[in-house]
Amino acid sequence: MALTVALAQVNPRVGDLSGNAAIVRNFSKKASELGASLVAFPEMVLTGYPIEDLCLRKSFQDASKKALNQLAKDLVLDGLKGLTVVVGYLDSTGEKASLGVPAGGPQNAAAVIRNGEVIAKYIKHHLPNYGVFDEYRYFVPGTENCSFEVEGVKVSLAICEDIWQDGGPVSQIAQLKSDLLIVINGSPYEYGKDDTRLQLVQKRAKEVNAPLAYVNMVGGQDELVFDGDSIVVNTDGSIANRASQFVEEIILFEVEPKKPISQSLVRKRSNDLEEVYQALVVGLRDYVLKNNMESVVLGLSGGIDSALVAAIAVDALGANNVYGVSMPSPYSSEHSVSDAKDLATRTGLNYRSVPIKPMFDAYQSSLSLKGLAEENLQARLRGMTLMAISNQEGHLVLATGNKSELAVGYSTIYGDAVGGFAPIKDVPKTLVWELSKWRNKQEGNPPIPESSITKEPSAELRPGQLDTDSLPDYEKLDPMINAYVEQDQGAFEMATKGIDKSLIEKVLKLIDQAEYKRRQYPPGTKISSKAFGRDRRQPITNSWRESL
Image (cartoon, rainbow, N blue to C red; front, side, top):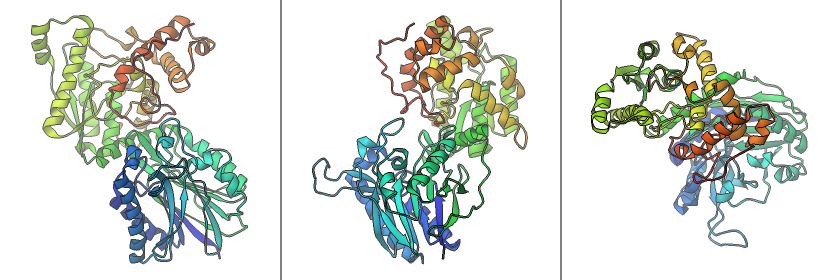
């Protein structure tokens, strides 16, 4: 008899122990109804992930363990006594300290539940300490392996980073002669990471000489977004099943000792632009809804950035929950005003116009600002207008700046940088154009006016202003930002690629000098290998400058 196994990629919320337990119960029932005898959930599904400093609170540790025990009992009440359930949760080392292990040290753990009890536990061995991860700061690592049997099938467990590092539990599991390795994960989305994951699980399956089932969570959590993409591979690396991206679902497969898993339905993969767009929609949607908000407001300039953010917001929350505000100044072109209105008509979002000239004139009558100060005043008046509407009506303000602008400081602090969330914060300008064109080709009325895509980008803070007055073309700028920010290349390495030396020095100086602005920018969905924020931590006070 073959063992039917289910992988449940679900969307938990950090700190919502009862809500997350309800998700586990609901999906466990669905898995059982589909014929599964074993169901596995993602890493720390019971607490949500990542929980950061929450794990240091004894009250939260205790609540997690209590919720786990209650879950075991509730599964019996649900008629699922014989179902084996693998659940990620927060554990701790106990009350007594030992050599190198503090009392009450938090642990990233997995529990195996059956018949109303926890029959086995596994503690994560490898604690990532790079990029957005700082688990080494928080958790006490485990040292023991975990194997259990279900209907004559020997199953071993690992948690996420345990298979990303060579050696450790993977090499130990290889000696256990398991029939299946289940890996529970909280692996955030990054552009192109799904291919890397597949190659990894294929490699590890061959090493442990057993099929490998990789289950990952979905949904947004602050700046992170999880894409699911749960995978089942055979010992030879062939794909037996693979889940969709960015949606909650269950995938099934059957395991029989010493036999390959038959291939099930493998879902169609998203193309690169669709994948990124889905990540941005889910990231925004969950940030709003998981923080108990309903609606958003943003400035509509008629430009491409605000147009893309508006389209993402409408797709994430529905047009009725998106409020767009046109705020023309004396320097706003007529086509910018008409493009903003056209966007509102195309998407169906709530639209209003609040001209800022009266406010601008009032400030100028008192301050008589010139040059850059005069330009920035317009941006700050717009930011203040949006925040006032937010306070009055309860909408979350969306900042519409992209990664290219944020990199070189081409934004006004307390102006266009205000907001509670920045959906395209990690999207370079060239990708903004690509995503906008892609979205317009999808089913239904194209949401973004063509002229917003084709016009020369401009902040329109002075007559005839263009972005290229201050910056190189984005086709030149974005590769330089990628090299310096995401790949940590210096000026010399960039010069070897034939980039003009004076341009290198100018751009790198702009990036270095803008760190103080980035520290004050709202959070936004991470899609790259190195987003501004937790991924890249540069000192604000910093005299080092790259030179050739």
